[in-house]
Length: 127
Image (cartoon, rainbow, N blue to C red):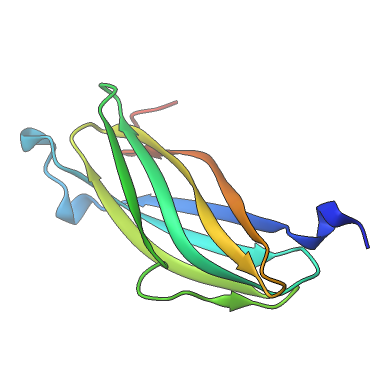
């Protein structure tokens, strides 16, 4: 079994601007993001913790670390996925998020599952 295929987690993200909770006049922009975490490797792996790097359009960076996601530390068998929705607030109408999930495989190996950078944007701000 190829070592590179043992520990593989794919992360897909969909974002949404929440206009009813946002107030651009006071620099409050609220976004939700739905994450799908899929175990594409061939060993079971548990999500232990998360690390997010959130950057607004003015370059202000906020780092968030914590156990699990939305109160869960899902164990994903090969081929299984876990989906959750969370949110964040920015002072600007556009920003980015990226990070990683810290995983522990059933065989005890710890590895990071990268979360590629994605854009948070108020509708009609970016073309």
